[in-house]
Length: 295
Ligand SMILES: O=C(O)CCC(=O)C(=O)O
Ligand SMILES: [Fe+2]
Image 1 (cartoon, rainbow, N blue to C red):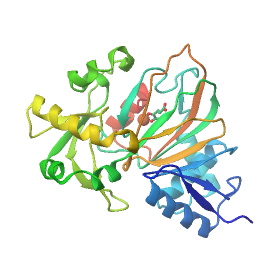
Image 2 (spheres, helix red, strand yellow):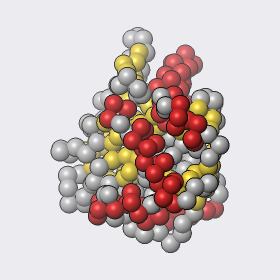
Image 3 (cartoon, protein in one colour):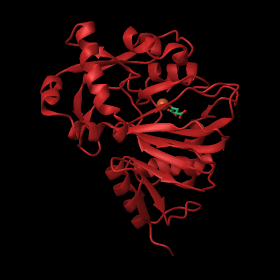
Image 4 (tube, rainbow, N blue to C red):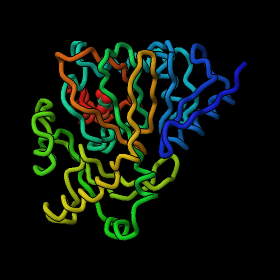
């Protein structure tokens, strides 16, 4: 039996896992290894795998630190996710077109997903990548002057590019044209907070979902956010994943932000199977999930 190993994907975050057979349930030692690697690197990649939605659900669940679900629970858990796709071709898929600025799914709802995963079912060239950055690394490397400016502040998070600051929105022209929603839920959270599972400090603002800093005027807020975004998204910190069919990526949605360049419905097929855990319980979060299947 090959031993599980990881290969770092960048100096900052992410690891490819080698030597793990995903076709059956994992033993305790392998689960421990995957959890530790996940908490350390924030994102795991498996290549050339052939898994169904049930197995994808099982893997996402064990990384949350919960008891591994039984086969029956994995199956019903996967079913509760419904037909959740990120695709420019599948009917009723989420985010069928447009650019997605960096965000954490559900950060606007007070019930962000803990673990997200995408599995490349059908991705045709030229491939449109997904980009990732670590909000933990961003905090660890944030210059002291900026740390002092953000500590104690709170940020409001929203869903839908129509609600972010105009200066930011206009910079991306038409590419942000996701459909307008009929609700605009938001949540206000500390800019600097502890990751609920690992206890690591997170710089919790994103270009795509943070509307502004509650304690500052709109312009002051945007000036400060621009400085934070320059730091968060500097090219050294960004991991760009060029999808291949059979790639499975699982990431920690509260530690790692994700984004993608523009996708068009007339462009090459790009179909990714998605799992988001846990499924939100509040009616508001579910309503938005069902309404638009937005990220
Ligand atoms: O299309 C992508 O690359 C990412 C989509 C996304 O934001 C998500 O799956 O939450
Ligand atoms: Fe997303």
